[in-house]
Length: 397
Image (cartoon, rainbow, N blue to C red; front, side, top):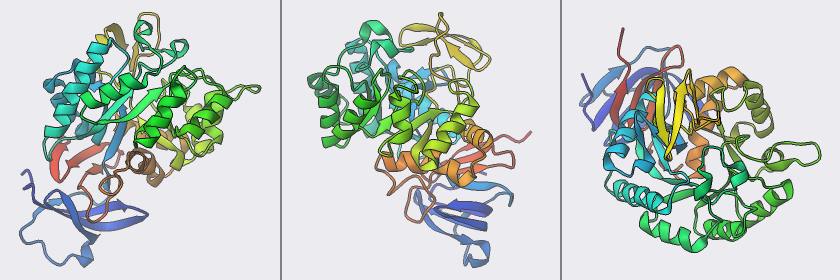
């Protein structure tokens, strides 16, 4: 039976709540919010609640937040359609993602504008609950460095243009929350100062910036790094580069794609040892082929070959991922030996704080949105609640 949306009782489960683990716990959900939690021994009444009993060794963790995702299940933010975003918000709870930033990419201006207008309208009218929530937009490009383009089409890359950004933010109805840019490009620092002043995250990415230039970007207000290690000046003993700056500067929180393809597991561990769990954010950077079969797909007007867990352009350049965020959580536990609490920090707490929504998301606490993921004994997503509604349940064999 699917629970009623307004009164749900999750019962008999291990709960990861802020800094506490509650054994044999319960969570009461009323009107999409977490109303009460504690141990089953403290539970006073179950009346008027739809009871959902879960095996005691299963774990309730806060919903995952993906700040960098292009697409899933055949849909992409750049499609610029309601149907594409409907597909994304419906598919993502299956991997434990309860909210996200719909991410654009470098393309012709009119294509970016189409995506921004569509997403801005969608965000204002999106379902109140029951699906993953789009918290805003991540503008990845076109303000990047062609030397570190990766899968961003070089012909559409432009220098950071503040007038153009202001126009785009207007078209998006103010929903751009994060911008990836190369700070060393003309206009880069000016744009970072503007973003900082207006409460938008300035992220250093697709960049050939030196260690010194990253320092200048931090002074201007940058506090985020887009997919650490990928398409940035690498660590070198005479030039620490962007990676060295990410390791040494506490001001920067770094995204990382933990699929074992984009970053070698030992390099993930190196990043974890340097940044610790409070300095990393797990992302997928996934494209439309996620959840689909091997084959040919499109990313920003380019053909992408998906085979055996990798998505690449014809020349072998990595073109996004097909990683699920729930698997990234499982992988970070394996690669680093970190605790589940630390994995939760990287998948839920840090992105919520970075996006300034920790007052309502990112942890299981009374008064917050009931964005809850139930993990089974194999650390696989068993059940997902998005703002109090059951959005996904794993089918029993």
